[in-house]
Image (tube, rainbow, N blue to C red; front, side):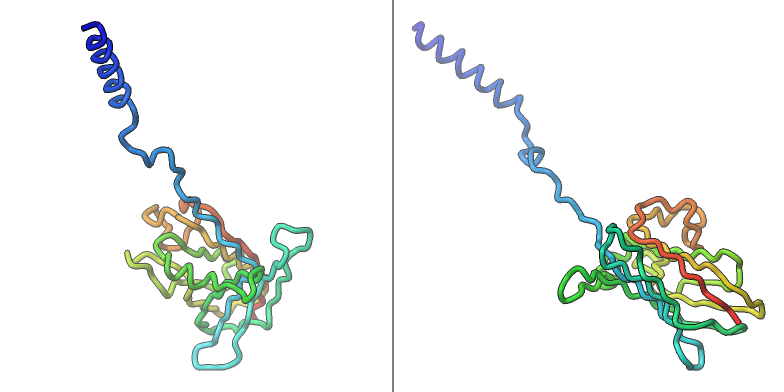
Length: 192
């Protein structure tokens, strides 16, 4: 009888222990980390409406956060009173062959947005593509110059997981965008 009593205490204690343990075994498994994209090269190609020679803006930083500064080039000047069709191409050239980050951004368009900051207002930049929710992405864009000439600092910023519903973000205002910056590059562009 004593043995039966001890076994029943043991059974009750083990039931209490099991009932207090986590029912969700997945709590012990860490969530997979979505690693940040490695972007070594960003190329913006601006093709004038009606044809003509495209202007290529490129920043290439093959050593990433290493000691060497990125190599930033602009192949020519923008013409005044002209509209340009713009496209962006991003690469990870630490891989062989180079990995297209552009494809990843297209696939994850809901989680990405480019922002275009123009320092002196010599030209306007407008989005020419949207994600599945109708919010801008920025892989395609339109640059429109007016009659004003001079030099302009164009900063292109890619944000990962921005708040696309925030005020002004759909218009390209990075102020309320949030998210994390994947890449930010400034090009000095001349309009003549």
